[in-house]
Length: 319
Image (cartoon, rainbow, N blue to C red; front, top):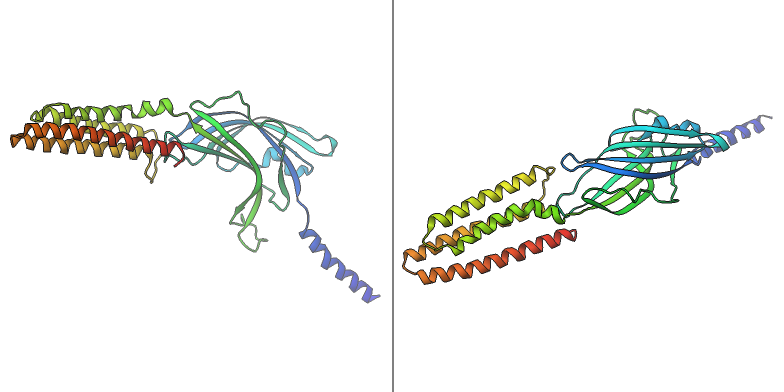
């Protein structure tokens, strides 16, 4: 009798833990419909999104009305939700408005493309107990809503896992690593930059052209030539500070920095050319000074246009 009991205990303690480890997590079928994206604050790196979210699952303990987690959300307002528990499953529909924090890439501003990221998790159940699945039927955003100054160029949904290198205080875990299933949304938006570009950079180009007029002032009129150049220099610097005040901080060289740096360099070259032309006039070489002014004017203007065109073309193509 004892050998039979020992064999029975052996089966229990050997196979039950294996079955527990191989438990299939419950599936939560999830869908989303975005009704609005607004209040995009470029400097503060945040935006507001309004959406409908629905979840279908069997395990009532998941209770997404209390356990819904939205990483990177600055605030979440739940204005409405309903729960239907018929047919042996839970169907939950909720209306959310979230203020999201995100990282902006400003290297190519104002010809930038951004990715708005949004993900949903359950704060109480990890990926061993719960996995998300996509409900892909129908549209995922209202095509009638428009982003002022932006165009939506991509919309991607995926389900995956998000790893946290911590135990969250759970002493039963042997190492600080936990994975939670995540329902992820990525929205690609492209700035409508045509009018904005001229609005922001027109002052810089006018400053360069004012400085460029120096070549058409007589070479010995030193006060007028240097006065225009110095005024243009300060105008270009002031224009850059105005643009920088509306952008988030960046440690990398941006298109704004590049174009203003090129403009300041060419204004300096105009000042240097004016000084050299004045020297020629003092040496009674007026014809040579006038010829130098005309050649230098065309060369600098051509180079300035080509370099600006190249930088802008590279930025518009994501370079």
